[in-house]
Image (tube, rainbow, N blue to C red):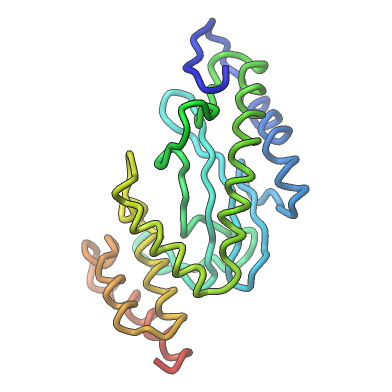
Length: 228
C-alpha cells in the first residue's frame, strides 16, 4: 500500500516480471518524454549538449528497489580499474550528478520511495504506479533546471549545500560528485575552484600517483580548452 510498509505473504516477483512492470510504470512514461532505455532499468535522454538526463531504478538491500535520477556529463571522467575513463555517448551514460529522493524526504503522506519485489506482482505494480507518478514529475523539474553548464554548476553547489538536510548520504558520499563539480568548474574556466574540488575527490586523495597525475592531466586539458 502506498505510503506504508507492506507486510504480506512472500511471493517473490521474478526478475523478468519485475522488468516488465517497471517498463509499464516507469519506462512508458519516460519513453513518452523522449528517453531511450540504454541498459537494464536505466533510461537516458540527450537534451543539452554534453549533458544527458538519466533515470535509474537501483537495487537496494532486501529485494527492494528505488528511483534515482540526475545527469551524465560528457566532459566529466570516471575511474575504472584505476584508469581515467570517459562516458561520452548516450549508451554509456552514467550518473555523475545523482539525486536520490530518499535522501530528502518530503511529506509523510507521499508514496513509499522504495519498491518491494517480495509480495507479488499486483503489489509491485501498485507501488510502481504510485512512485512513478511522484518521481517522474520531480525528475523532470530537476532536469529542466539545467540548460547550460553554469546551471549544472548551480545544481551541484545546491546539492552540496543541502548536506544539512540529507538523512543518509551527503554530497561527498557520491564518488562522482567532486569530479563532476571539478570538471564543471574547469569547463567554466575557473582554475582555482576546479583544483580545489578535485582535491576533495576520493580518487585523488587515496589512489596511486599515476591516477592522480591522469586526473590532473584531464583537468588541465579541459582548462586549456577554456584558455584558463
